[in-house]
Amino acid sequence: MGKSFLVVNMRGMVNTPFDVRKTLENLNIETRFRATILPDEPTYLGMLQKAKEHVAWCEAEPEIIKKILEKRGRLEGWKPLLLENVNGLGFESLDKLAADLAEAKVNMQNLKGVKPSFALSPPRGGFRRSTRRNFGQGGVLGANPDLAKIVEKML
Image (cartoon, rainbow, N blue to C red):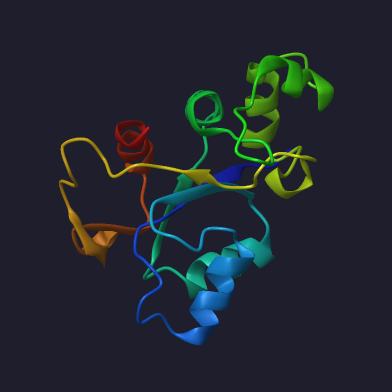
């Protein structure tokens, strides 16, 4: 079908323009080091381009999505996402849920009772590149093919 993106807010909301602030709120990643999974649709791509000075994104692979769901997936009330909760959503395993999220068959916002974003920690060992520049300029912001490695260090 399609693909999806793993999106992480790398900067906070201080001194953020109003339109970018509203975009980050609509993406459910209003705080620093908050991540979500978005389908590859023109609406979301426009939102990512609007907030490219604040977020980093890459194509979401099922392996990294599974790791994020295991370690940082939460239900309403900050309860951990367990296998019986995944079965209640209509998936037989976490692998199937991760594969469907990666192929954009389901959307994080449509999973009932599951928080649409994940709270990450700062990366162990720090950033190797600047968090104030785009990927093409030697930073981590914008479309970043190395983001999956950074997110693994943030789990």
